[in-house]
Length: 260
Length: 291
Picture 1 (spheres, each protein chain N blue to C red):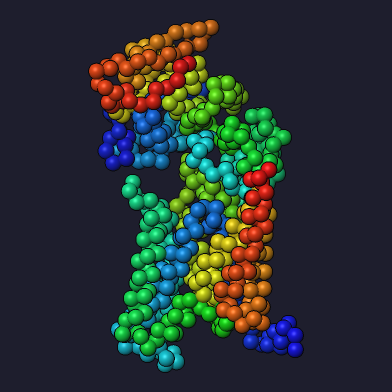
Picture 2: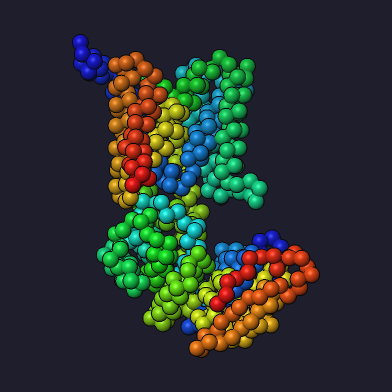
């Protein structure tokens, strides 16, 4: 059971299986962040418990929402990526040559090796997002968690970033949790999808192809949804509200996700 | 006699106050980089006032207990204003580390409330008839005067500086991580509360000790101005920190010298000199914005 003081969603059972990508999809304000924080242990559960098959919490590489971070700090790209090594190194020890090498390797993997010494403020939004992914990889994670990684990105940049995540997932044998309100970020990349909307008390989880359907997405957004497969990829079109007589009240008032 | 010769001739008088000013400036200018970057500038002002409440409370409790502060050795150790000041400041620092906040009251509002309530309490206690006779002495302890500084305060400043250096040498990467991105630090198992508490307590101790040595205004200024000036000129923390310390030290030393030869208020002159260091950064930003 998750929530801040009162339950946000119905009682839920959610697992992240090894080597899979779980997409957590829902409109703005649906409770995705609360779900994510509960999974990461940052928000105490109102009921139930977290189970770790390995007997310990996994090492997590976390990519926060970029706009929550202050890009004006006098830090270089390498400084930020090195932060990912902090918990691996433990207190009382300074970053050494090995940590710097790992951080540079993480930057090389995301194609930003030559920008290691560039100041943070000089990066574009997309580059900043990649640096945060490199920091997560530098933490040598078993689970990579990304919170709205493609918000404010154009479709091409979004695609490039998600392909990068997919490549990193394979290269490092990662499990991935991708929290987003953007359908395009989930369609084609997530192997499993959780649909979340606290306004409707909705929580459903299952294989991506079973979840990305007209019925389920229609329920999630309160709108007509058309789902099609084009060249092996799922495309989703959001239409008008299912219940126009409600006059835009409630969830249908939300900004709809864009077409995919 | 030239201005400098006159100043040099009086070195027995200014040696310790100048040393105190320079030590306070160096310490606060270093910590100030974190204070400014963490957007907690007002926390330093609130901590200064809250440590003042501790001092005023110590005198008030002493007067209730019938202790004459003018009698040598009359104040029991537990009622020393220094301890009260430190305890109050550290308690407030601990409270601020808990990131108090509410949907309707942001954390900064709560810090502001702390500042307002503390300022009012200091005024109320200082004007209480019970300690009216000691008001001047209390004022000196509260706000310092940067002209006469007892050796004990210099030692306290040096000890606070040493504690800050050791803490930052041991935990710099953790302090940086939790300051820049507390959410990710927490996810990766770094104890945000522990390191924020550590940083805030060091800032509280530094502010509490420095306020008594050089006064409230220079302390607030040294915590903000050199760091802001350095941040406007640099893009690398390794350059920002020493530059901020250098600005602070020069502000304290040059400010003291100018106040001596021009017979100006010492603390205020230090602040004016520190403010001059903002100009290159402002010019740089203006140039960048016009390009």
